[in-house]
Picture 1: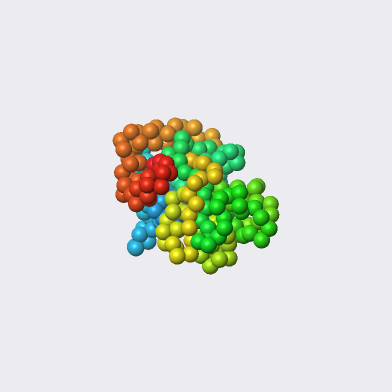
Picture 2 (picture 1 turned 120 degrees about the vertical axis):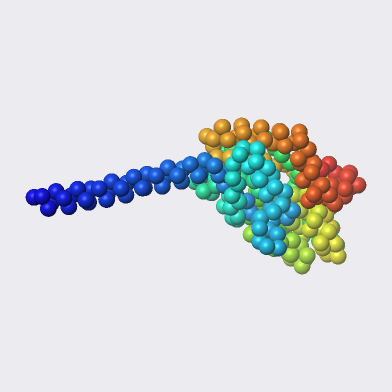
Length: 270
């Protein structure tokens, strides 16, 4: 009897110790979580989301995320993932925010919330240099092929509006550009700044139609029901703009584009 009670006492003591240790671990983890914000982005969209020569995240969105962390007094962790996986990751709590050059639109707003806009842009075209295409109205014809990047607003627009042309859905921006360069696609639907960059890199085979046929704005993606974080993000964006933060980022990463857009007569907002 005494031996059984002693054994039970020792076993119970160990069990109690394990439960206490587990509780402390969970408590510590929760405390750490409160001090950390996990930001999801696809590091394949220079100069906004990319990596440096050492593989470290860098770019406009990375700097913006880090400035948000400073403003909130939080540690920022960048989580690199495919663009079309960002919203599912946010909804399931794998990440806390999306800062990945994401267009805020009605379809996405059904499943996530957005901050106030922080950049205005629009969809335009990268076309073959000798193509007769002069604008978006020339694309929806039999025999035409149009490249889009999976999960983007260009992809969504093409799915709704191109009924006669063939739509090539590709995972990477570079692959879509290559389709145009090699003459396999008549055009690539993408945003203005990226289209300008891709044209500059491939002037011998492409040309850019930078006039936007659909105006858009980028915003920070936030999980629904997290109104407190949304307010804090909006407060930060207003403060960062007031301090000239966006102008500095534009001069650091996009000076050439800003000057070129001004000469071409297209608005450039950052």
